[in-house]
Length: 210
Image (tube, helix red, strand yellow):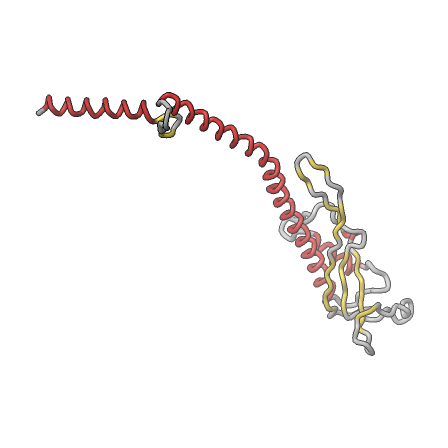
């Protein structure tokens, strides 16, 4: 039984080696066509496999720059959107702080309360550092709006009383960046011009004016 088992295993290994050598080439099973020898079929399969690999490399080399630009562009767009949102949050925090203050001097903006509102919005309350680099209180501006009693539309507040009875108490205040905040989109091997963004926030004014 042992001798027969050894012979059987030897035959299986020999047949397996024969078929793997004869038909498995270049990682593919070659088939002999009409009028084509086994060697010719294997050579043809190898050539086709090499051509496929070469085409794949060329296609990848052509698509790689496009994929890189798309990836980096998506990341940069996300960063730009996040920056715009953060600046809007800074303006909103400043506007909400100022909107509940009493005795705001709208004739002489920015006054001490306005400066305190800008500092509150621009500074991280935990670290004390600036939230957005290169954004300072000098770039922010407070605009006031009053509701026209006749039309109900918002418009400029009356400042003719400045120096006498003070400016008209606004119904809304707006925090804006009149000169804009400069943004640079960065792409590999591409130099894009800078551009400015102008986020604004308007909130109701619930405080009092001088």
